Image (tube, rainbow, N blue to C red; front, side):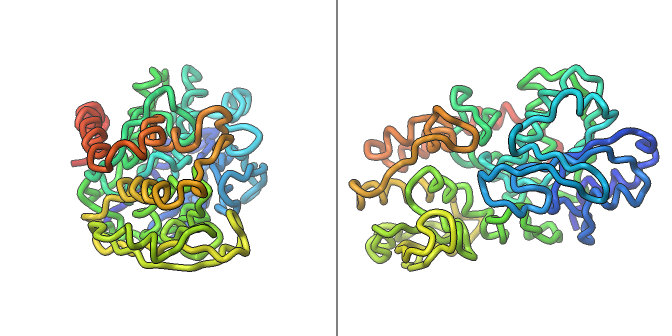
Length: 381
């Protein structure tokens, strides 16, 4: 069984007694026996001054892109870092001796929790506050990489490092990369995973998958998310408002049988024609035609490539109905949502000109360079 960093932090907790501690965390960050990390720390006698909660709130109760307010938990102030501000003020941070980071990521660049941590680290730079990262497995493993590298011109709250869509790094590895990339003046102590190998997918870890956000209910969701999240940048529903977000997708103008006829022979997955009625988000209450993705092989399925293929088919089948959304999107008010998700404006501008195969060749060349760059930040074999 893989053991997360929280286990080993709790074993050495005496050295943190008496220190004023802040923690970036949420309800999915638990011990293997389902106890909130923050509660386990309090039981051991740590003095936690403040909890910083990322997008969706500590209990992941809020829907996507909805600002979250401050609250209280266990008598401790909970400061939202996804609301009026994305970064705590320096006065709040300067009151701390140690900042602990224990967050659950899903292995896809768009997921915002890691970027919340990066923004806080940038603010902490030079403040002489110790940073402690409690590492957790990447659900998609540490070997599978896919998609274009994010270009610096297109950095945003859904990506603040030049990594591919499926980045193959743990939270600790990404934060070590961020420290070097932004030349941050701070110490990071990592409590690493035990027994985790890069080849492992999450279902091989022995740990329970705890939904880290409202629309990430199952491990299957995490495996389709790298591609189907692209639909957030369009007028097609990504399945929010259903019980299978990102596995289900559709719009009022889609004929499911016509669509699925163009999505045959997907390696590692099958797409079924599907009708559904979302209860909220896009087209709430309307009957939508679309598809339901069933991943048959996590090792073979290429989610980002599939997502781009879906965009291409939608543009070809429904050229006068299918649209890309304009900003704002995730605190970005100028750049197109699809561009900050895919990493540049290349896919949006060339979707009808360049084949999927040609696109894949381009991003695979970028990934080769990325692999060399990320090597020195990897903590596991």
